[in-house]
Image (cartoon, rainbow, N blue to C red; front, side):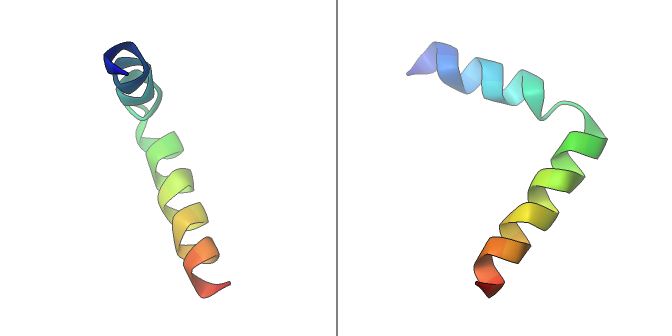
Length: 31
């Protein structure tokens, strides 16, 4: 829902967390 999207955006506001999430997505793509 809307509130969940907002909390996700706040979580990924941290550049380091965003980079970690991006690398994790790349890793899952390889698998």
